[in-house]
Image (tube, rainbow, N blue to C red; front, side, top):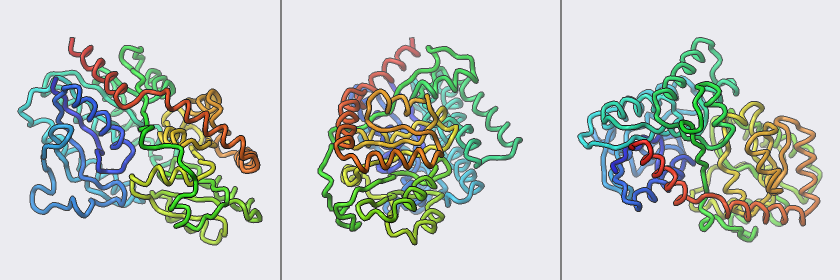
Length: 411
């Protein structure tokens, strides 16, 4: 089988989507599938093309090499500051146009196309490629767009919202199958399309439990940040419109008199500068940027408690994949998330953390105080999370699910 994959990120890019897709493609390649990936030059970490990938001449825009998954065509991503929605939109548009060139003019006869969204515009490229190669299309939805952008206020124009909603529905209806990360996302798609379970398939993300282990918390990273033996409450990940980061600031404000507690943010994004300004005078708050991906196990192990922060209304359109890494590291999680959604249900069933209502300050702080004052409960929750994640699908199993789906679509 020959497979064309169109993804916004791929390793060595550090975007979570790229890490997940790379692992799936490696397993599919080992299963004998001939793969051609169309993706971007690495740019996610610093929002500019990595120095070692800054290629001169025409190859700067489209470059094809043979890599471990098969052929990989990397297109220029037109990176811009996350602070400008217009610039980011134009960047996505430019990348979409470039990615369409190798997708449509490739002489290889493909048996299937998989497209990753967001950006939703790649759904158009996937549809055109599937028509060009006369093969089925699978649309992999990592986040529901435009729902997330609308709910956080990034898109407010009714006209623009209407355009994106029509594009979303078009992409769904042109796909032969839609894969989503959770039942909540599946129900979201089904409510808009009327599709059944044969068309909308839940295929979860995963984490490498052999790379991320429950390590001792006395790490070099702790020493670098001067955290000592204090109880560390950490948020690690993207700092954007979707996260209710003010909850963490308010909690740190309340706990300034506790010498045994410190708050840490490890990440970057559109809200980073504003957040850094807000916490600069807090003596119990450390703000630091993204660490290299190979330090992730150490970073996760350095915390006693991890937090997951989703604004109200996002639970049915987004599932933070960081929860898998937190569980793998054997650490408890406090999640501010819509009740009765996938993440809140998982925390309730596994007893690996505490779910609180989104943007409820008192409830969030009460959960933190419960855990900082009970080391035995923290340990027990971390153990339960690790036991749960060890039973979840691996990259190999997820790849087999995709392989079965592609074979079914080709019958």
